[in-house]
Every structure is written in C-alpha cells, then in structure tokens.
Image (cartoon, rainbow, N blue to C red; front, side):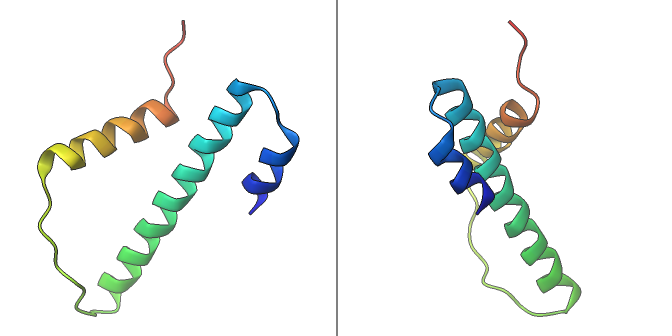
Length: 71
C-alpha cells in the first residue's frame, strides 16, 4: 500500500521504475510466505506444472530488480 501512495508522489521515470520493482518484490515475498506457511501446516496445495523457462525468466527479473547493474 505504501508503494501505491508513493507512486502518486513520484513523477520521474526512474522513481516509478524503482517503485514498480518494489511492488513486484513485495508480491513475490508475500507469495513465498504463503507457500511456506501452507507447507509448514501440512496442507495439500494445488499442484501445477511449471515450465522451467518461465521460472528462469522470473528468477532473472528478481535478480535484476534486486541487484541492478551499475552503468
């Protein structure tokens, strides 16, 4: 929610990009916590097939978002 409020205040492109990265990271973190809690409770979850190329692409996004390259 805080990121959404900041998006209304920040107008430059770099700031918006950083806020989008923060929002995406927060969503992924929330999803991971939910998965860990589901596993820890011993609940059976919905199984889905995972295509490895999509998983690798997501991992690349996480890496780029959390460890940006210096120019």
